[in-house]
Length: 183
Image (cartoon, rainbow, N blue to C red; front, top):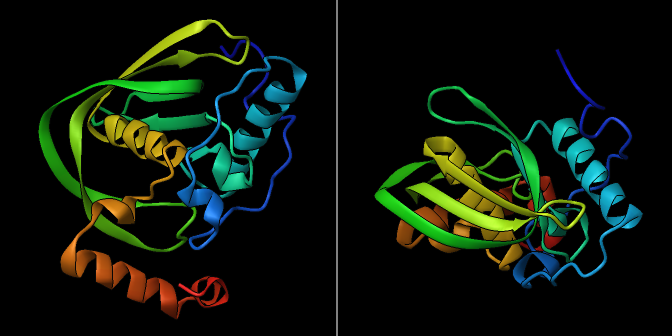
C-alpha cells in the first residue's frame, strides 16, 4: 500500500543540462532555505528524472546550482531505494572499486566502464531540513557516488582516463546534442 503522493506527481519536467554547460563543471551551492521552493525543486527533479527514465538526478542537471539530488534506484539485490538528499556529504566509501557501465542523463545515450566503490555512505538533510543518512551497496552505491559527483562539479567522464575518456568524448561529438554543445 502506498502512503502519500507519488514523488514527482506534482512536479514539472524541466530541460536537462547537457555536457558542455558550465553549470555541470561548477560545484553546487549549499541550500540555506528549506520551504516551498525547495520542495518544488525536489518535485521537479523527480518528474524530470522519471520522464528521462533515469535512476538519479542532481539539481545542476536541470539548471539549478544547488546541492540537491533525487534517486529511485535499485541495488544489486533489486531492492528499490527512493529518496532525495539536500546538502549531502560523502562520509565513507569502501569495498572493492568495481568497474561497471555508467551513463548520465546529461550525456544521453552514452556510457562507459567507470570505477566506483562498492559501498557508499552520505549524510545530508531532507527537504524539511531534518538530518538523513543514506547507505548503499552495488549499483545503488554507484548511483549515490555519481549524483554526489554532480554536486561537486564532476561528470563520470571526469573519472575516465586514456582511451575510455577519448572514446566517450568522441561519441558525444558525433551526437546532435554534442555538436550543439561543442563537445
